[in-house]
Figure 1 (cartoon, rainbow, N blue to C red):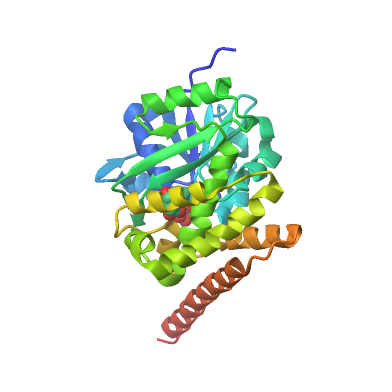
Figure 2: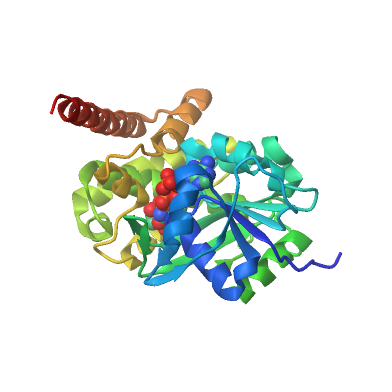
Length: 321
Ligand SMILES: NC(=O)C1=CN([C@@H]2O[C@H](COP(=O)(O)OP(=O)(O)OC[C@H]3O[C@@H](n4cnc5c(N)ncnc54)[C@H](OP(=O)(O)O)[C@@H]3O)[C@@H](O)[C@H]2O)C=CC1
Ligand SMILES: CC(C)(CO)C(=O)C(=O)O
């Protein structure tokens, strides 16, 4: 079957990752990208546009829950705890031929989106090697990394894979189509379970994750629990995969921070449920001990609780004053 030309990209979640890609699609053709956003979020995007590495673009916005010509490609770039809402918001932009690509970390978003829209619409994907930081709505990165994607079946000649590849080429978005996308996603999961969680708890930038022996060891111990549960889910991660995790971290800017560390520093909710939460749940299901992730999970939940308590106190103080 011939691959088709994808013309209309709809993005839900124009944050650090989403805005980075939206800017590239806009540079390809302003008409090819639209952002699903409502209320204050839409007003902000329409007023200020999206600024990525000093370039500001003003993509068209689409109303959440609206309907229009279905997207050729739907990109989902929200955090995990906003996924359910995003699914409701984009439903009217998904048609029979829409291809869906999730940029979310973790190993569950494709299944959730597949349940909502049909598994046949999904390509599995993740982003790696990007060190994007979003502050006051402005995104900066020193490395754009690459979008790793593929068909779950492993067929690299799947027409959907070829169509997305052609679009990414045109938009100058670096990509990789691995032999086994599921194995690759688990490798990324191991990177996030170790790197993101330990960085967030210890406030460690990439340089510290790569070089401080105690930080590396804690990262390794958390990642080894992913390696231990993986075979029970049909995935085989090796020591070589773990070495590749540290090799990737060492290539990122030493002062750069994982998305989870940025969330903790900003007092935002983290994605701990899809990292420690998933590892602990899989460990329980398969009888594999996961004490490191149980502890990291508690610590991250504690950090979220502290941030919530601080916001409550600030709110009460400002009401009194
Ligand atoms: N940042 C990074 O370097 C990397 C991130 N990832 C993963 O990518 C995913 C996205 O992360 P990241 O880009 O950092 O997250 P951000 O928090 O920067 O961006 C998420 C965006 O989604 C928007 N959003 C939330 N709900 C909706 C909705 N219903 N409709 C429209 N927009 C919505 C938010 O808007 P608002 O700001 O208004 O709330 C925000 O702009 C996560 O799973 C993360 O783990 C993966 C690799 C690297
Ligand atoms: C570790 C990193 C930066 C890899 O690109 C990532 O996935 C994240 O910060 O969430």
